[in-house]
Structures are given as C-alpha cells and as structure tokens.
Image (cartoon, rainbow, N blue to C red; front, side, top):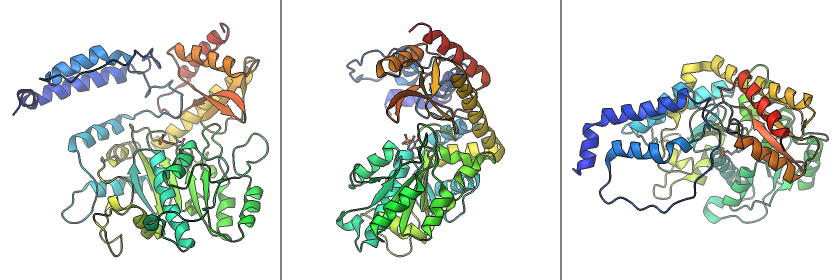
Length: 467
Ligand SMILES: *Cc1c(COP(=O)(O)O)cnc(C)c1O
C-alpha cells in the first residue's frame, strides 16, 4: 500500500480525533465566528506529486482556509434561508459518511439503508401531520425535490394529453399555473424541457400578499375549458413567508383536473406547531410536496425530501426508471429508489434526519419552529418601531422583509446592507419585493436567541448612523 495511505490507516483514530477537535472548536465558538469574510483571490493550484498525508493536510487546511470559514451555521446568519445543525444531526451525518452506504433497494440481498430512509420519511410525515399515502425520499435540496415532483407532474399531464413524455419527449402546450413560484421551480421547468417562461402567472391577493388570488385562479382555470394543468403553489414564499389557501385549493381539486404541487421548502415546518399549523391545513390533499431539510430541520447540507402520492408511483417510475434496468410490473414489489428520483447512487441522507428527529421529537421541533418565529417577530418589532427602517410586508412567520425608510434606491439599500454584512456580526441578503429594493432576514437556525437580536439591532443602528 502507498505509504501515506498505510500510515493514515494505522493512525486513523488520531486523525479522526484531530478532525473532531477542529469541529468542536468551530461549534463551541460559533456565536463568535464572523458571518462574512474578505474572500482572497483564487490561486492556481497544482496537485502534489507525493501527497502529504492526512495529518499534514489538516494542518495545511487550518493554515490556508480554516480562519476564512464563516459561521453560516451560526445564530446570526440570516441570509437566504440557511439552517444550522443540531448536535444529533451531526452525529448522524458523521456516521453516514463513515458507513458510506448507497440506499437503493429493499430486496433480501440489499442493505438496511433503504429501511432507514423509509423510517426517516415516516418520522417526517408524522412531524408534518401528513398521511402515509405519500411516498417520500431524500434528495440534495428543495430544487431537486421540486424537480422530482414536477417531473412526475409532467408525466401525469402527458398521460392526460394521451402521451408519454418520459419516452417520447414533450409535445404540445402544457398548462402550468402559479402565483409566486420560487426561482428554483422555474429552473425546474427549464430543466424539464417545459421552459422557464411557459407558465401562467396568477394574480396574488390584493395588498401586501404573495399568495394566490383564488378568484383569479378560478378565472384562469375556466379559460382552460377542462384541459388538465399543473398548479405550483407555495407554503412559504421566500420574501414574506406567505401561504396559499390550501383548503380552497383542495376544494378546487374536487371540481377540476389538475396536479397540485406545494413548494414548502421551509414553510412546511409551520405544520410542526399548533400555533401555525392552520397555515398548512389541507396540504395533505396535494399530489406532491417539497420540504427542505437543510433549512428548518437543521440538518447539515445537503438534504431535502419529496413527498409524492403513492397513487402516482407508476408515473413516478415511468419518469425516473433507469433505462439500463428496465423494470416491469408493480413498482412497490421490488422497490428501488433509483427508479423514483433523479440520482442513481446517493448518500444516506436519511441518517442525519433520523438522528435529529429521534433525538428531539415533536416537542423539539415545535420549539425550533416557534423560537425562530419569535425571533423573527422580535426583529420585526424593532424594524417597525425604528424610524430608519420599514417593513415591506407584515412578518407572517420567520422571514422579515424590510427596507430603509428614507431612501429605497438600490444604491442606498445595498450600501447599508454591505456595511452591515461587513460588520461580520450578522449576515442578510438583498431582495426586490413588488419592485422595491429591500433586505431579507430569515430565521430558521435553532441557536438564535434574543441576545443575538440585541447584537443585530445595535449593529444596524451603528451602521445606519454612518451611511
Ligand atoms: C430554498 C428554497 C428552494 C430551493 O432549495 P435548495 O435547497 O436551495 O435547492 C425552493 N423553494 C423554496 C420556497 C425555498 O425557500
């Protein structure tokens, strides 16, 4: 064996111990870790001929990169929608790496990883108060989950139009309706060959809302005159965490022929709390649902789940079946994940989720969700009460969308945001809400506390007084 490989094999325990200590050092000082860094220019790298072995590599990483790693999993990283990592999820994630399984089949010669995945999916369904008639699986993120769900929706609408799009390609005009689709859903339309602009934009409810106007939806459905369509709806829009009216959509489903997809990447977690679960009421009637795990479940990147109704399993298999292993008959008889989602080989992403769900249960997740909303509310109150800032929409759940009161020009808003992020104490991202430049702060990290909100407030006041 090559000597560094051999040496590392002998010293495995020491190497893992050192890596563990590095990790603990990061986690224990996470609240002090800077939230942004001045990124050095990219350099040209050459691969070392001899290698240097694991121990020296860790030393080199420490010197070259470690101090530049930002506290993205920390309590004041409010940009995009970025979750943290619970202790148990890290345990599961480390072990997923160590076991290095490739979850595929449940046949007798398979391994137990698919059972772990099914178990984690059942825990998730229970967490979200969803019935067992959904088939679920893990993918890399909500984008891939949307892709999986909308891929099956595409096959469904093809069948309704008397065609097999998975085999023959797309032919004809597909009717897709949505009010506030996430950019990743449009990316999926592009990847699925439908085209990212080939959808009908439904009006949102008047006023400061991003949710579907049901009357306008009905009007557009009537125009279709009985033709099948796909509805992409939202459980939590990224700017203002607005929710479509799922009870009303469920009722429409009794009268019209459509595939109902819900993008609940983060908003689906409203179902974890009796305070907010009215927002997801009726979502069990959807054909497919997207939920991210690396956001509000607080498991490490990358992880998300799709839920597709089991009654559509045949369509799902037609969409994703691996052509090298064409597979006949009932898909539930010889189940293999590679016939149900985009990837063939895949990581045991279920393990970190299974660990975290098992460790903290319904009560733990109820706390994580309610705490994040409380923190969003605290921050939102500050925005409302302060003369320099202004909410762009009411804070409905965990995302606060705001701007500067005096001047909402892009230059001014960006220069404030840049200066704020430069403080390295808090990180937020820009947005444009109904044509106004603004800033979003998204609260999903389980660690965020009222003292973090105090730090953020005082830094914002400091920055605003200097720009
Ligand atoms: C984050 C997000 C996505 C995309 O998720 P990734 O995990 O980044 O792929 C899709 N939809 C919504 C509503 C989101 O918030």
